[in-house]
Length: 201
View 1 (cartoon, one colour):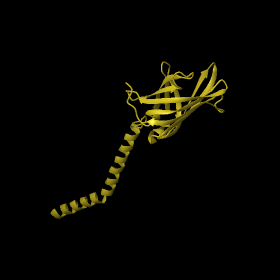
View 2: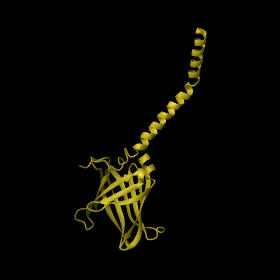
View 3: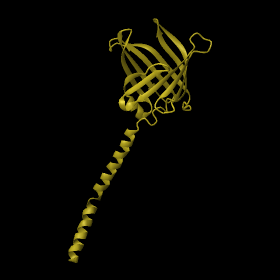
View 4: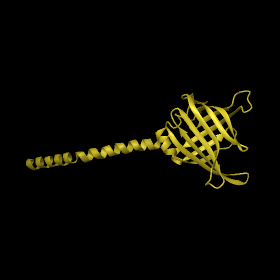
């Protein structure tokens, strides 16, 4: 009886030992899956970080058949709730004809492939994006945003192309009436002056 018990014990040990590599593999896969799940649940943890700071450059816009070139100063901060950014634009210099200050709020939602823009005092505008999820993962790169709407009773297609690098921030807006042929309506080319600025109150 003791011999049988010993034999059974040895067989059980052999069973466990022979399957240890399988158990290790299962635990490893579970660990990797858990890490991936955490990453997917929080894809925008540092999404706004690389936008924040002080940028200077220029804006070129199409106005009445001609292109107007204006110097531009942009300060990007993150809203206190962390859901959006605040873009404070200063066009031109004080005392100049083209001097103007504008504020726009920008919210990026990679998992929904959506960008939401709102000029201060105006309604939100929602754009469908392409490449935003990859942009959120990398922190730098390029994505596009598109929207269809009616302007003066005519259907128009607006498309924005955004490219952010460590020291440069470039984006342009285009418009089409058929969704096929686009014309550039505005170009923004900026270089970084300083990094992240404090969160907006």
